[in-house]
Image 1 (cartoon, rainbow, N blue to C red):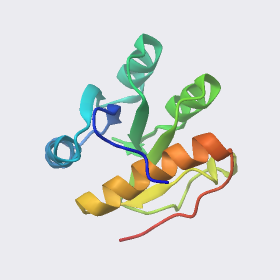
Image 2: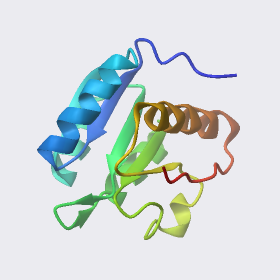
Image 3: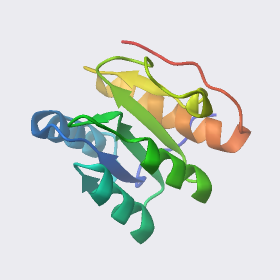
Image 4: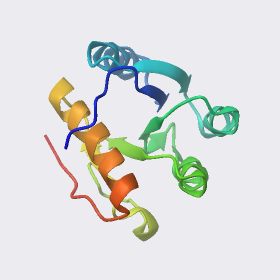
Length: 133
């Protein structure tokens, strides 16, 4: 059963401003609320510690730094998350093999799918296939 995305509070981690603006618009169009935006690992970890969001969308590569410490923190807290990457699922460590990955560029329907998949993974505790638009 699909998750209602209306009012969903999202932590969005992205270092490219154009991609961030486009994705923020898509999230808004889906009825989501942008709770926090971070452009690097350190700011993202601060946002995770502050909380106030239901799900996170994480760009894998943040100006050369990998976002995996943020993913680990979210995992420990039981907060669902998904990855976004210009490389698809390439380079995702084995401990995150079941995390849904959306390849950039993506459509609003792809974004809706990855948010749904992240929630499904969180509830079922099982692997979710990766998608490349």
